[in-house]
Amino acid sequence: MHVNRVPRARKRPALAVAGLAVTALLAGLFATAPAATAAPPQAPRAAAPACSDAYRIEQTLDGGTTWRMCWHYNTLSGLVLDDVSYQPKGEAQPIRVLTSARLAQVHVPYDDGEAEYDDVTGTDFGQALQNLKPGECPGGTIKTVKVPDMGNVKGLCTTTRARGHAYRLSDDDSTGGSGKVFSAQGKDLLVYTVNKASWYEYITEWRFASDGTITSNVGATGSLSPYDYDGTDGKGWPIGKGASAYAESHNHNVFWRLNFGLDGSPKAKVEQYDSKVTPPQGDGSPKTKTTRTPVTKELAGDIKDMRWWRVVSTAGKNKDNHPRSYEFVPGRSNKFPGRAFTKHDVYFTEYKKCEQYASDNPAANCGGTSVNKWVNGQTLKHPITWVNIGFHHIARDEDQQPMPVHWQGFSLAPRDVTAMNPLTPADLAGQNGVPRNGS
Ligand SMILES: [Cu+2]
Image 1 (cartoon, helix red, strand yellow):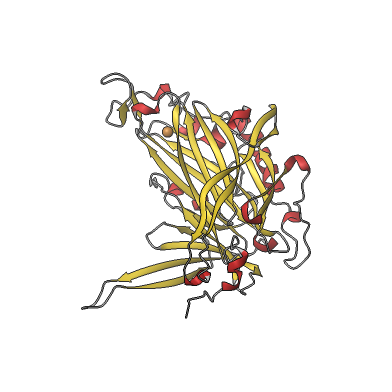
Image 2: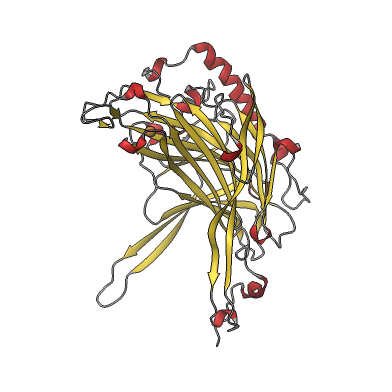
């Protein structure tokens, strides 16, 4: 973004739009190919996802958990992960989680209302994939990406990174008084790319933990746009000497599109949970009541204290006979109420092929060009999850030069995917629902 402060309505030549739209549709088709979703839940599945070696990522982590996925590259939004599964130790087969996952927009409105960008669809974000030096992918492998019209870029890093304690349990009655300390250090598989959008560089990072958690963060770095040092209207922050170089404040509203394929099926249920606390009466204690609301129709949802959502498998259960699900855990967000599509934190829409980008969606005749328009009362059978995490960026002296990475994102936490912690050590495996209490 941000070379020219061009108004939103006329920032791209029509020809480029047409070319990109075709590419986007093709990419959408590829990402949702029936072969990736049609396997019946009980059918035997191949250990490896259906892609060639060059497009396969497989990593075994601490505790014996193996993550597997395929990837491809989309001219607009860059990295797309397909057919993501994980297989904890003790599971005979990989557990399918996501059919596809990728960025769906980076919307950047400036505070003075004079510039507004859709960085994914409106800049050369996808085309400007950056070559990574070996040192930028410590301990990992840099894969070659064939970027359409650009050629080969050494641009996809896959590596692992320590995340500290996975768990700790010291000797107590529940461990049998053996004097043991059960403790493990966890590791994550990391998958990331760097895409340049004019002055900014966006790191798109996916993290897959040995305990089944998936996290995606986008990190903005590079450089503030020097063309936007005009925030002397009370909407900027001086980053030069004295009262000079007022960098205009702006928002980065990052959207993701998640197509779940839990247990190999695109069909899933969505549930919202809300907990309400009642203050104590008299000498009593506060009480909390949790309510489950099935989300049966398309929803534009808002983050609230003690509210959460989960996507629930209709095709598989864990060994406790509980349906598998993944819970949405948003990171900190500065929600931007300035556009209809940025007004909500999460959207659940019924799958439709042409609905690919949260705003500035290139497909014609798709019932509007932004995600809010697609929430129109349809029954959810094959829900698509859209995540919106915002960051209001008021520049500071430290943002030069280069700008330190500022991160925004979310996690997906497994809920009842396995019957116990997938990292449970053998000595504690008998304690599912029956912890030893010494009595
Ligand atoms: Cu910024």
